[in-house]
Amino acid sequence: MRATLPVAARWFEITRYDDSVTHITEPHVHPMLRCNVWHVRGRDSDLLVDTGLGIASLTAAARDLFLHEITVVLTHTHYDHVGGAHEFSGCLVHRLEADKVSDPTLESDWVTLLGTDFPPGERAALSDIGYALDDVLIDHLPDPSFDPASFAVAPARVTGTISEGDVLDLGDRAFEVLHLPGHSPGSIGLWEARTGTLFSGDAVYDGPQLDAIPGADRDAYRITMERLRSLPVKVVHGGHEPSFGRERLVELCTKHLNGVRPV
Image (cartoon, rainbow, N blue to C red; front, side, top):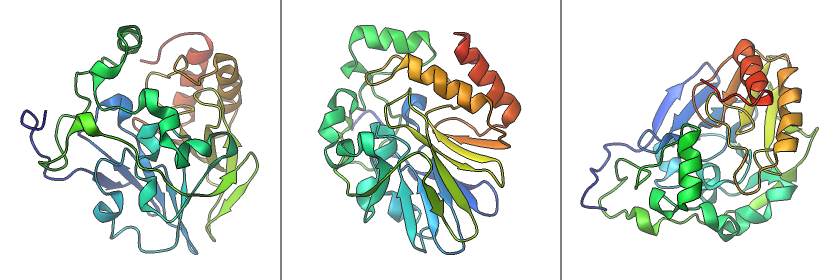
């Protein structure tokens, strides 16, 4: 596999969203695993929402961005969101999934960069909802020695757990933790009512919602979608795909509740 894939000139794409929010992503990763990493600059400290796959060093790529004290929050523990967490001194995660950060083998059924590792039934189901899986789920290598078949997630240190109603205070910005189960038991979002900003993780994003994977709960997902649909958001920064506003949020939640795939 190493011989058939080109080496990327750079692994991460880093884009300023506004004066305080920066978007980081891995453009050479299959869309299903191409996590959005969000950096929020605060007066007293910064916030990092999710950490990507850990294929290449996030801290090296964004060293000019990570200049201050930083709180790393994992919206949930699927491997495309937690792979880079080990590079930081610690992270926060919902208590229902904390053990999967310190022991990533608990997510072992889903830790792979090979589409061929997915059972045929699961691969077909993902294709049906819009995520056709290539045999290899990256189209470039981060360096010539990287072997997709040997990919694994490194354990990371959990320095605290977060729950519904907790507040992360950056000095001039404050985000309330929303427990948004359905995609996974401990999925959370970060909500700033003052600005109408929601970091939603994989609870909702502008793409196919995964509600039938191991650990998902469709009944819980419906409750989460009802809750999100009523939230007075101005902008949603999801765990995948581009950001969007309230009108699209209502549309996505309504389609999900009606059993219609997003388009």
